[in-house]
Length: 387
Image (cartoon, rainbow, N blue to C red; front, side, top):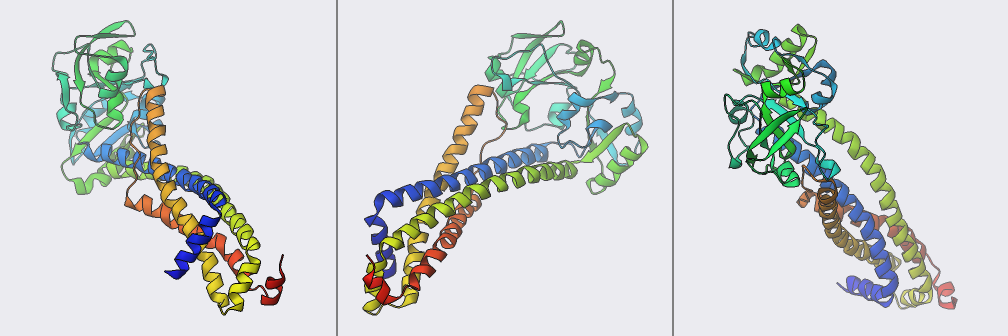
């Protein structure tokens, strides 16, 4: 306790310098925590969305097999609907759900990030594939509907849609019949419409962009997916696990780049503390020489300087973690306000918070080693003569 009291007193004697050092290190920690919380939130949102879906396998055009999310198929290609009759004959395939997606380029929301994706589906899609999507208003798509829309909560809010409104795509007028509850996933930015009507509007009769599949035996899902991909080369079949793994790999690349940026920020933090501690011990050479002269051991001086460095970094770590969380919330809010939609919420759990604290402690320990070693080796006589 005496060691901590002495260290805290020494830091308080140079408040301005200590505060500036804490701010510098805190910024580095906040940057790291922000990156971790946003990437974690995006990953959790994706995994939850995939895990909640009722599909065991998803078929996409061959051109889209490298992408982790089937929605991307709308940008790269399609395949004939008649293929489903053959795929449904595959052993272990229980039922298929045809989906045609399109990008409504003639829909221009005020916020550029709020461009929705049109989902052409059958009425069975909602209870079977996305049962977690509840209705906030109106109704779902029903048999016999042709040009109707069920809007995700996010796009409905941005475009101020209500049941009874109409939207025009490719010269066809679609009536909004339902608004979905918020799911915190990509579904919040979707516009669901009957399959045949959307295919007609986009002059793509009989074309599909992806197909969710339910199987009889989930333990054979991977085997079934491989069989479909081998038998029909124009499509690629992927299990839920495969899609999550691909997204994880993609996030791994992003996180690797983030680690590089964080390392630079933390290096700056180390330099902040290092320069501060070198200046601090340089100003206290005579004081430390006196402490040595009255019997204080070299190791105690070493521990004192390390403790000062750790206290500084620990305070900076706590502040940095809190600021990082607030910063990630702020960035999400800005994206939502200026771009329209966000499909994830930043996540700061105990693990991320602890990671920030541990990084701060490591930064403090590394930055304090050299100044502590240097001053503990100072000759007593030379230190007492130091001016």
